[in-house]
Image 1 (cartoon, helix red, strand yellow):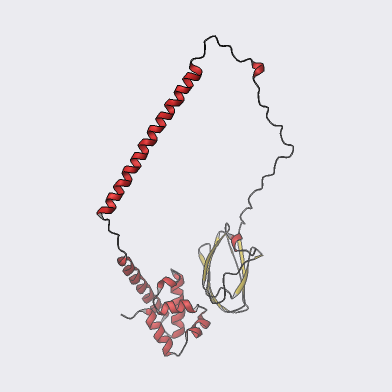
Image 2 (image 1 turned 45 degrees about the vertical axis):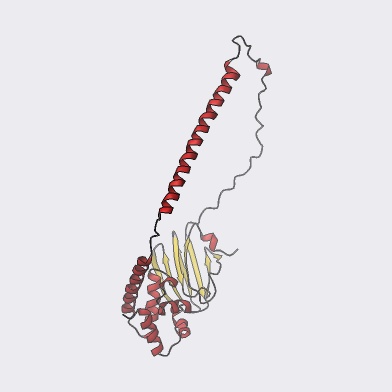
Length: 257
């Protein structure tokens, strides 16, 4: 049975298209396109992102996108099943069992020795205490109160050190993008997909979220962006695919330093 990767490659070649040409239109990296054609699912993003790549590629080379996505899902499930079958449980030999038994015996011995040492220490302390205080003559005079030196507490500081509170997380996430080149983008705000398409150069997009933003881009070097009005760092060079999750707690890690 022919896999979806071979079908995509043959359709591309039949149209006389190169991988570079397909990548330029779909904004999917060449590495991801090569992985699709070779059915190398370990180099593709999981879940809906991999299916989005297949859908965009199929539409470009003239294959029905929905049929291609269904075939991709079947191929992926088959590959994962075969990988699970290839995993072998290591055999436990007689030598392994003997080693484990020696380990258990050594642990029990250490525990027993520790318990015995603890008993001896407690007994020694009890005997020392009895010889130190238990034989005091009954008519021993108490220590005069005047001879007892009491430690005086230090005077209170006039200026107690200030406790620096940790910066509070922002109440919302405000993200703004400005694209300098075409780029495929998928954005989910608080679990809801708010954008999934190819954005053209010169476009600007802005979104807000209460808790988190999931960002998947096919060309990390095609845009600049801000987080809560502050410049954010680049997610990578042009042509690379990136998937990031931005929350109110980790938003500072994406800002420029």
